[in-house]
Length: 240
Image (cartoon, rainbow, N blue to C red; front, top):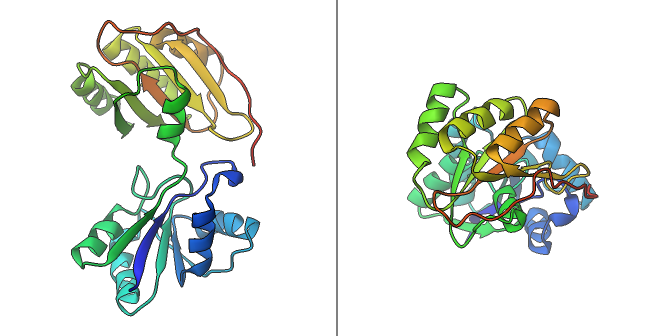
């Protein structure tokens, strides 16, 4: 029985792909990719020659039906984003929901995730945490979103782009105060870095140091059980 495979791919270091993901990408009839040019680099690295087609936020609603018809006709299709897991702050959610509505098998091939990678080494409580993803680029909506999360007693995990991170940290400091926080950037890549301290420390750091790369920001939840975190604990890592 044919299926839609939701395949996680590396967020930076190409070595982070799983054996299963490589096998699936080589065996399916078609790969629906957020950016086919980006995905072809990954496929070339593992000598995979499966055809690709684009599926991104601007064409997903219109293209989902044709992809699902191909699955119903007996083809297997893999869904990938540029990195990480499709549908998690990436395109793919509409296609997945539509496949479920049609009783098409949807099979996850789990793997890299910036959220999990950052949380695992942040040093903040992670017995439970709240994945908030991207906030609105508009300050008013971003602040209202933060205010709605202010009283949660779990670690908060956000994604942010480099050109908005300073405004994000400024708003976060106003809403959450000087809570312990971690800014992880360029995860698994050559210039991977973790900046640890209070939100005040993080804001000051990136006022002096130009932010580069994609960010995962973790903020301690409301409560008294706050760990001691040394500011600007950063380091590099090799990667693809």
